[in-house]
Picture 1 (cartoon, rainbow, N blue to C red):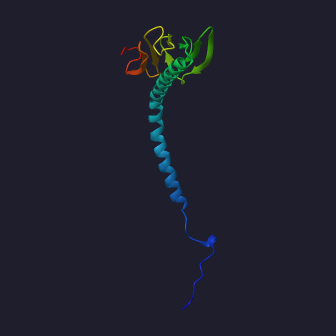
Picture 2 (tube, one colour):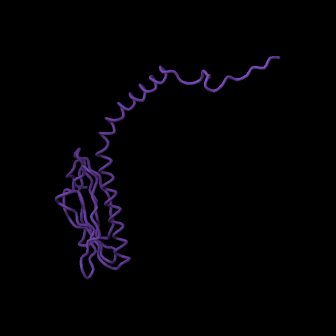
Picture 3 (cartoon, rainbow, N blue to C red):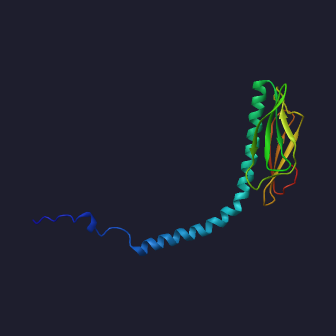
Length: 160
């Protein structure tokens, strides 16, 4: 029986041909060309949802902080830009920070929402209206008991 030796690694015929690689690249290019326009259409919706959840989360956080520190906290929304400030109302009012919203999100009503040291809304109920570049809207609603909820609307200035 004759023994055959394996050829060295650099003499193997395995691998992909140039034509196979070009076909795979063409398929990837086609998939990318289809996916990018869909992503551009969905991006404003994702930004609006992200901004809504950010504000809802921030309101819940300052509610817990107001109870823990036994002082009033509030969020003051900017009329001129897409940001809000966190304020601690104790013996003096101190600004805790400025938080921006995602690009393309507008605040339609600049109001101040806050919580007392007992976790109830101060100065009562309120609604923040956010709009994206496609005209869709979201309302973040604060009830007098301190409950925060998100209400999505198809039209920017629609009420819930």
